[in-house]
Image 1 (tube, rainbow, N blue to C red):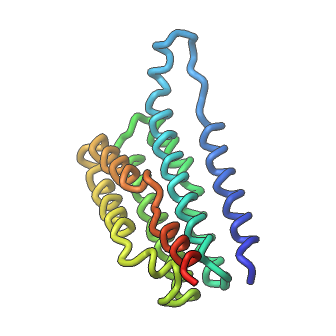
Image 2: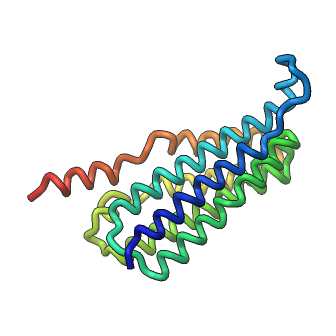
Length: 196
């Protein structure tokens, strides 16, 4: 099966999720600069969520760029990932509008954790299809960043009930770890193309 339909569908859903987030942001009441302080937590949660969705989109793109064909398992794993990512606008808004209280902050972490697990599942399905000698297998290696991210999300969930602002810092730290695009796949593709 061709991967192009899956890529087009996934890209469209990423765009919709990001658009929903910005459309849900409310305009502040008042025209003074001080009026912005009321929407600052919503804006900060939006920025964090936009960064996370951007990270997922770029890594998803890189992973699919070295995938030759998709199977039914890959399609379902991709839908599983997109399901969890589609919940980010809800959790982000709930967390931001209530100024980062314990339960919404923990739920945000749960969604990040489940999206991270879903991404690793999709990656595993692609690796099974592509084989152990594939460009993706060489690029991913042990995938320490993916595993450390899951630990950070779990830590953030636990901390949300003690100090929600520390949980938010943990979520930001995990995002910063991924903010620089993962160049492993790009390097492996460049090397594969330059090798006769």
